[in-house]
Amino acid sequence: MPTDLFDLTGKVAFVSGASRGIGEAIARLLAHQGAHVIVSSRKLEACQAVADSIVADGGQATALACHIGEPAQITDTFTAVRERFGRLDVLVNNAATNPQFGHVLDTDIKAFQKTVDVNIRGYFFMSVEAGKLMRTHGGGSIINVASINGVSPGALQGVYSITKAAVINMTKVFAKECATLGIRCNALLPGLTDTQFASALVSNEKILAHALAHIPMGRIAAPQEMAGAVLYLASAASSYTTGTALNVDGGYLA
Image (cartoon, rainbow, N blue to C red; front, side, top):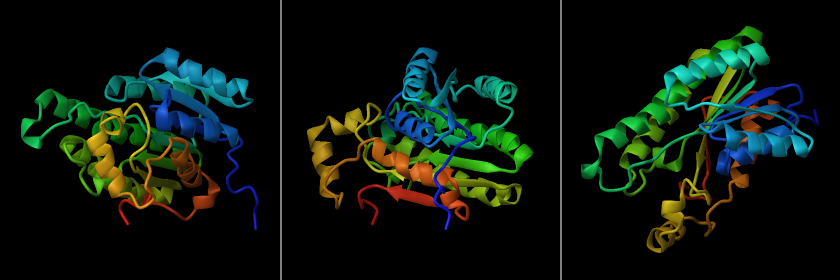
């Protein structure tokens, strides 16, 4: 049996939202396994800091700013990827937004549109552009970071939960239509994770206590605990896995 199933040497991996939290943890692990990681988020300075740290640790990384809520930036980003690397083997759609926290009847239309633009339209066209590049050299792996909220809506997180449900279905669409191109597409469904993104939940004692009461493992996750699942989905270890939604939630959805 091969012993290098998780080896990504020679692969090029793009991770959005990689300047902190889950995205940063993913970028660091993929680089550790040999991939040249494109560290991306809205702000180049933050991306460069992570990329420099990866390089200092002996890995390969390039910083590239991209706001996935802006279609023109997606186009420009993939033009840059083609020109510099000529290929892409792994795309991790991790960047997301959740500006609305409150009762669904109080949803603000601007917050609604922003959430849809980033979490649905952004993921979709990032996947389209990555898929076009992947099919030119035999395939690749697209990993969408969705959420357990896409299966069981989070309290006071209506629009976000709706978009994450869409991401799960989007994953299945790309998996079915791109399989013959050698492109696999899977989703990661993180549970409550200790990140700045989830700070409104983690810092609220009442919400945190309620969440912990429904997590069999009795704790929230660290960002690094999401990275291993992404490595599996990015690597040859998951060569026959596509269209799946992998729960990494401490048993919440069990």
